[in-house]
Length: 392
Image 1 (cartoon, rainbow, N blue to C red):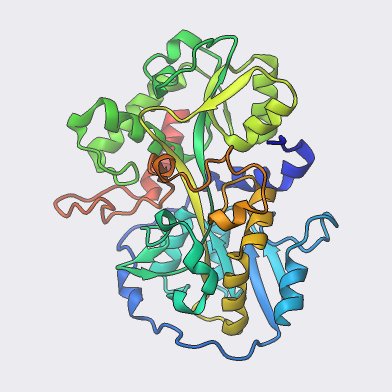
Image 2 (image 1 turned 60 degrees about the horizontal axis):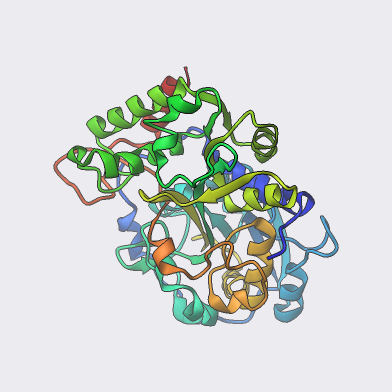
C-alpha cells in the first residue's frame, strides 16, 4: 500500500477532526415517531439540480484539486447540477438542515438521530437505490442510520479510533487501552487523547471490559452512575495527558518529536507518519474501540428528491465511493469499491470481525440506546458539561 501524502489528507483529516461534536445536547426520544413519514415509491425525471451539504472533502468537483473530482461524473450521467456547501461541525449541519435549503446531507452518527427526531430527513426506499445492495451488511440497519427497521440513508464510509504508540517506547505492541488509562502514569506527560465530549465513550468502552459490575452495555448509553465512573477515569487520565488533540498536524508533530508516545489516533494519520519514516504503529486493542460511520440522508423538505436519490445511488457506486472515501481517508462501503483502491487492506475494509469491535459514534440521548427503560440515560448536553469538568 502506498502511504498517502499530507497534501492529499488536508481536507479529509481536518474534516474528520471537526467531528469533535461541539456542545449541543439531544434529549428525548430516538425519533421512531418519524418513521411514519411516507417513503418514496418511484423515481421520476430528475429536476436538473441538487443541493448537497457535506463534510469537507465529501463533494469534490475539481475546484479544490483538478485531479479530485467525482461530482462532474454524476452531473454528466444524471443531468443533475450540483451545488454544495461544507460544514465544520455536526451541530452546524443540524442547524443548516432546518432551513430546508439542502436536498442531501452527509451525517455522522452524532447528528443523524437528531435529524430523524426533528423530522428533517425522510426515510429512504433502498429498493430505488441499486448500489445499496452491494454495501457491507454490517453497515446497514444500524442505530445511527435506521429507526425501527426503517432506513434513513445510505452508508458512506467508516473508520476506527486506534491506539497509536511509539515503537521505541513500546518494542512490543500494547494490546490494551490500559496504557492510556490505568497505566497512563507510566507515560506521564506523553499521553494524548481526542479532544471531544464523545471521547467519554472511549472510557466507557474500557470500563465495559474492566469494570463489568457497572453494567455498561453500550458506551453511548450511560446512566448517571456509569457516566460518573467514566468521568472519574478520565480525570485520572487528565493528570498524565500532555496534550489533547483535534488538529491532526499537532498529533503528527507530537509523535514525530517524541513529545507524545501513546494515545488515540486514526489509520490515516499513521499512513502520514509511516510515509515520513516515524517510529509509530497503530493497533485495535482487545477491549474494542469507538469509530465513525457516516450516512447520506435526504431532506424531508427536498425540492429535488429525484436528483437526491440519484446522488445517493451514485455516491454508493464502486468508483465514486472509492474516490470519496480514499480522499477522506476511511474504509469504503463495499468490496466493489476496493477494486478502485489499493489501500483497502490498511483500513480493514470489509473485515466484519474487525468492524464488530467498533462502537460507531452515536448521539447520547435520555432514552437509553441499550434498551433500558428503568433508568434515564445522560444526553449529549450532560456529556459536554462533563467534558468541561474533566479538562478543567
